[in-house]
Amino acid sequence: MSSADRPLSPHLQIYRWQLTSVLSILHRLTGVVLSAGAILLVWWLVAAASGPEAYEGVEDFLGSWIGLVLLLGWSVALFYHLCNGIRHLVWDTGHALDLKSTYVGGWTVIALTAVLTLAAWIAGISRWVS
Amino acid sequence: MRSPLGRAIGLGSAKEGVEHWWAQRMTAIALVPLSLWFVSAVIGLIGADLETVQNWVSQPLAAILLVLLLIAMFYHVSLGLQVVIEDYVHTELVKLGLVGATRLLCFGFAVAGIFAVLSMALGGSS
Image (cartoon, helix red, strand yellow):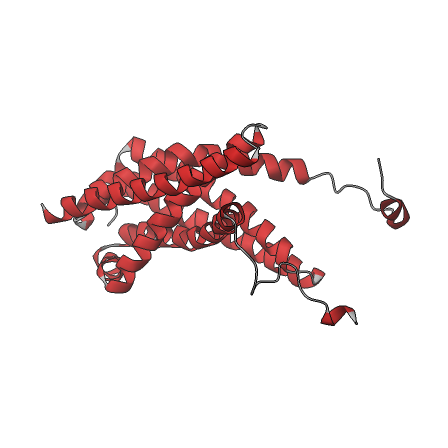
């Protein structure tokens, strides 16, 4: 068997995913997503500094369906990356590295991400309505 | 503490890994309060017109925190994307190009954002 024919590991079709690796991939993915979000922040600031015409462009984009979906995605990504980043910082001190703690921490991060995202959007929508 | 392969290849440490690792952690810690502050501030600005936004940016505290956010954020983005690129791109020249381009873009975006904040905070020309 030549090296090219060998099965890849992990063999994705029969691979059972684990929370730990999925969260690790998500940390990287949300980091890349947030890098794009950082550009939006600069666009917003530069437009606000440039005047009414430029600012209208940002407002139209953010108020559109695509803009709102992107904002929702970025808020989830931000809260996830924030919470999981703190989990990483705890690991960097040498704590909570055993299997049980990584799972407890992982589920805590997921729960906190949901709570923070929900809280932010409820606060935002109630502000928008009033 | 060197493997036989490591001895044969004869390359030592690049002696710059610690700085990257440390800077990534420092910017991460700085971004925890800064990003939470920013999210809550933005929620408060929902529905605001341009003038309200400009007045908000012009406040000293908001301007200072925005500049700090931009610096910490783009530094963190640059370090993070560098690791991603180094993990997946193995052609030396392409890797160098991408990491270099990422650095420059991060620097450029940070400068643009900081300039916008300062022009609103100090100039008020618009």
